Image (cartoon, rainbow, N blue to C red; front, side, top):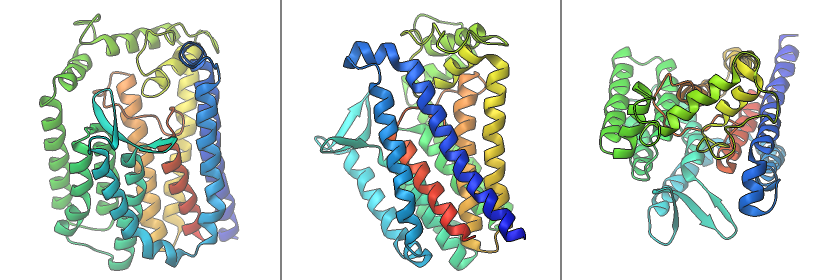
Length: 358
């Protein structure tokens, strides 16, 4: 009976992924119409591209489920190493694509993707397999797995993905039963890396200034933070109504990616945004609950890692939008525009369903 109940809950987890991906398509379409028409002469340009990645992610599930669990255990480390190689390629001139001064994109023919997003998936898989096999790994071995992607992603640079990887890896390592001193050491490492990144870049120092005082220089240094405040203020309690956002018309930067939550708040208001976030939190709770119910160490570690990944990414994005944390450029899971992020989450989610083996 318990197995049957958990199987139904696992299916609801897949519904959770699809629901927020479809919700993302709706809001991307709503928010990007004017920009898509002006830049690409196609009002549905962004929606079509995002829909392609969502459908591709869903289409991958039958293949993920058909391959045995032992296959994923064997290929976990090779996939991680291939992903590391791809992160290195991104930094090479003529191979990686530079966008807004950051080297994050790898171009393969008509497709471009961010290896850093896929690293969340391959790192999660590799660490979970190792802990399931050994139960406990040394802190040095853990750092040997964590530091190479952090260094390569840091060279892009991409502070947001670094923080997500530290949250993901640190949470899995903590629940494996290691000494709390190692967890404190990891937290200190994350703080040091974050501080170095912030204070070594004029642009990121401006973002930190925007966090502490978004009104100090609203036409220049703190423009993004200031526009976020205006956007949420316009939403008020009840919102302006679907499709009625003013801030999406070139006032707010990265309107379909990093800032999409602010525009959603402008249109559906504080109450609507609160319901939106509560449903997302319910989905996160479901992931952790399913992980806690399994007797398979791999499914447990993997589920905890997946939940912490989505929770950390959502917190960093929502916190920045609400000016509760510095802006790190992290997209909101499944809702923000971005094929690499959607594919990584759908792959990870589909594999979690496989590992539950209900």
